[in-house]
Image (cartoon, rainbow, N blue to C red):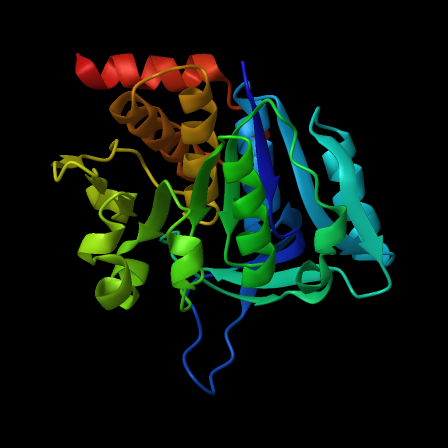
Amino acid sequence: MKKICIIGSLHWDIVVNTNKIPKKDETASGSKVHYLFGGKGGNQALSSNRYGSDTYFIGRIGKDNFGKKILKTLKKSTIDIKQLQVGSEKSGMSVAVIDKKGNYKATIVSGANLSIDYKKITLKKNTGILLLQNEISEKINLIAAKKAKEINCEVWINAAPARKINPKLLELIDVIIINKVEAEFYKKSLFQNKFNKITKVITLGSKGLEVQFPNGDHKKIQAFKVKVKSTHGAGDAFIGAMASYKLRGNNFISCLNYGQAAAALHISSTIKQRNKILEKDILDLIIKNKT
C-alpha cells in the first residue's frame, strides 16, 4: 500500500466548554477546560494513521512547552516524523469554545506553522496521496504539490480556513474538501470550467455532504444520525479516515461513506473516547445504517 504524506499545521489546543458561546463584549462562565493536540495537519495525520495508513508528516513546532507536548503526542503514534522541523518560533496554538449543543468557535495562532522550510521537504516515491490544508503558507502548499506531481501522486487539499488560492495550485489539485461556508467563499474561483477536473467534496454537517466529480456527476450522501457531544475536529477525522480508505483501493463513494462514519463516531464520543475508535467501529456503524 502506498503512503500518505501530510504537510500541515500543528497546534496545542485549549478547549473550553460552556453553556453558551459569548457574544461580542460578553463574558460567559465555562464548565470544563481541556488541553489537546491539534491543528488540521496533525489531526488529519492521527486520523489517517489510526485507520491503517502508512503516514508521514511534515510540519514545524517551536522549542517551547507546547511544542514538547505536540511532539510527545506524535511519538505515541506510528506516524513517521523524521521531517518534523523544530525552530525558534512559538508553537502554533488555538482556543476553542464549545457550547452544550456541541457548536463551537475557535481562533488559531499559527506561530511556527508559517515558518516551514521548503528546502527540507522530501516526498517519498511510494506516496499515493499528499494532503494539504490552509493553516500553512500557500508557498509551501504549491511547492509540495509540484513535488507530488513529479512522482505521480494525488494532491488533496482541505482548503480551510478559506482564503484566495493561487490558480497555479488549483491546477495541481485532484481533490478539494471544503464545508458549505468555504464553498460559498470559493464560488467564483473554484467552480469554473477550467477547474472541473477537481473532485469537489462539500461537507454539510448534519445534512451529510455533496460531491461533484470531474465528469459532471453530482451525488449527495446523508450523514449518520448520532447524538452529538461536540463537532470540534469532525472534519479532520472525516478527511484522514477517507484518505486512508482510498489508499487501500476503495472507490471514492465508499471512501466518503467511511469518512462520514468516522466523523459520526468522533462527534458522538467524548474527548477521551475518541482515540479509542477502531476501524471495526466504523464498519459496524456502516452496516447498522444499511439495515
